[in-house]
Image (cartoon, rainbow, N blue to C red; front, side, top):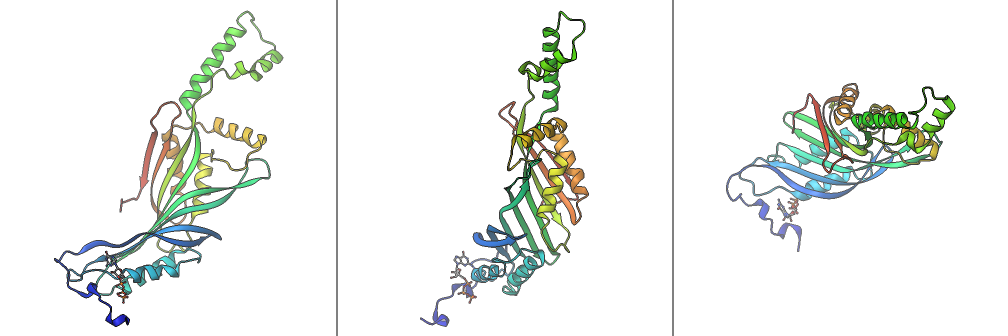
Length: 299
Ligand SMILES: Nc1nc2c(ncn2[C@@H]2O[C@H](COP(=O)(O)OP(=O)(O)OP(=O)(O)O)[C@@H](O)[C@H]2O)c(=O)[nH]1
């Protein structure tokens, strides 16, 4: 049957006269490129339906516009172009266009000391809007790290001191070799502080003139601020360096949140952010969480 003879009830008048804030599709599979890496992404694409008389939007037109992103390096100008096409293809129907993309950024990360490297996936999402107020892009990223509790470390040190007092109770002075041997034995670490895998969830408002997504730059800055990023390739020399990093970066969730707040305030191209750190404490069954934000409106 020729196209023009196909039924098209979308052309009929709406049942009722209610504009709709968001109409579109969620969970569209889309291959993207970012910093030379392929990304298997999911897209949520939509527009507002502002014409109260219109029955529905033209979903195929949104779907087909996404093809402009497939397999091409993901940049904000390209995302803005797709949103503009959403509106052009819904002229008279829609004033706002929405495109959210989610996936995992795969970054190669070097070992701490050895000349090795490995891959780590960073869950990410890009949320873009084109409305009469203009274009807005937000980048969300999750970064794993290790946190060791400062209070638990202090309590462990006390127990080590008490054990030392007990083991050398009879001696007024302790010969350094005996002390060194004692420190090198299991009794020298009779108690250990609790540490746990932790997550930093960052949501960033990008400057409208941003070209490429600053994923690697934000990951580098956040992991440098925390000092205890989860590792990829690890030899014993790397594991020892990781133990030192944890000992030198004891962190409550408040400490991690403050470190990230300061780091993101200095990140070029960021106009606001919201962050949340989650320490999945090995001490108890619930998490220790801290939140912080700057120049941020939940949208
Ligand atoms: N608006 C809307 N369309 C839907 C929905 N579910 C399925 N569709 C279908 O989406 C298909 C694509 O709609 P359009 O993009 O208008 O397709 P079309 O009319 O062939 O293409 P155009 O000529 O560009 O309008 C239609 O066959 C709709 O029936 C829905 O809930 N809302």
